[in-house]
Length: 79
Image 1 (tube, helix red, strand yellow):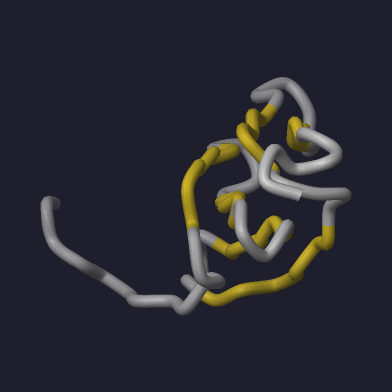
Image 2 (cartoon, rainbow, N blue to C red):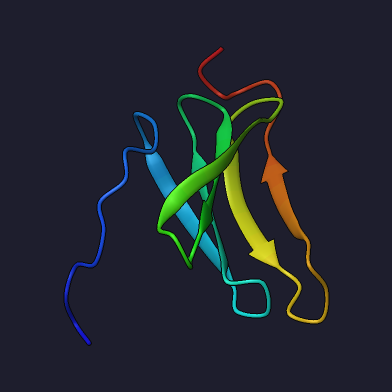
């Protein structure tokens, strides 16, 4: 509908997003904080904050399953 329905704080550097339509779940990577925020599409609220090794550069969901995968670089290029 081309309108903002909710606003959510999700770290200092949100970069990649993936949506699983089967579970109505949104995954958002934050490169600087090395985290993945999990958001419920039904409530538009964060449901989990997942720490990853470092510098998550991508995320994808599997439409046939209820899971997601995050790719990371370790160590981060600037470390």
